Length: 328
Ligand code: TYM
Image (cartoon, rainbow, N blue to C red):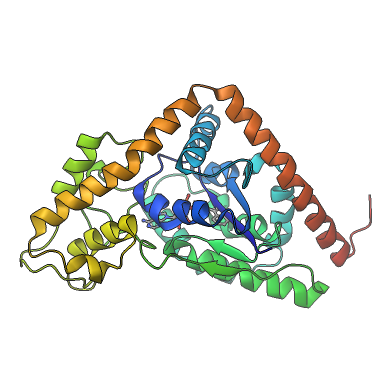
């Protein structure tokens, strides 16, 4: 059976871009794949400087993942720090990737530029090595992610190929999977930037926990452009194209098909907002229920970690043996 691995960081709140670019694909495919999904709390440490934050956000994120439809009886949902093999393999990955390759990562360049004058951790630089460990530990065939993770999956493939070449066939070389619609959801206020947890204003970012009135307002105020025809053309009409893309992703159509139904921006904004509200309402209700029983959430994560460790420890062992480390 095809093995799938993909993860999400417990930093900030989950937004519509995370959902349309990644989570809904994880849910849709969990039954036909052997699915592993990690809450990558160690990755969050690259930008965490206060105690007591990551743990709470990890549990809240677990509730969100189950609320969007990941079924703990079907998919393995685990917390990265509960599976120590991630950190162990990460070192080997760091020794298999070059300083030059890491220097070319656009996410490092963007994130470190945003933190100019602040503390920039070495972990922010070596982040892709830990991500490669996440992926390769599970012999993943597919990595379903949004478009912004393309470079990270590509470097993982390069690392796997290099390791296999040096030490013999050890890792499965994974394929990137992005959704046909919704792979890059843009900020509603700044449609040339991706929707992101670190957006400058909340107005452009729709959170999965936003109340219906807030969602509708964010869509009504979405930035479009000065001409009036509704057309899918991301290069010259990024705002309108983003709305078409979101409505298309939520209703299972292409943005071009969605555009056929509109001659004005106003109704498109209203329909996109209402479609997102309808998508989010059941998720929010389920999330509240799940958060009422934090003991059960913790139990589910423990079961997930046991299943994850069984796979991850075998792969780490294989990598140690391939290198020829002296057995303990
Ligand atoms: P993270 O936590 O930023 O995002 C989780 C997932 O959401 C997708 N995504 C988007 N998709 C469409 N439009 C957007 N605006 C948008 N914003 C985010 C991301 O592409 C991602 O799929 N480095 C990863 C976490 C990670 C990981 C891994 C992913 C760590 N290890 C192993 C896959 C496999 C990250 O920061 O995602």
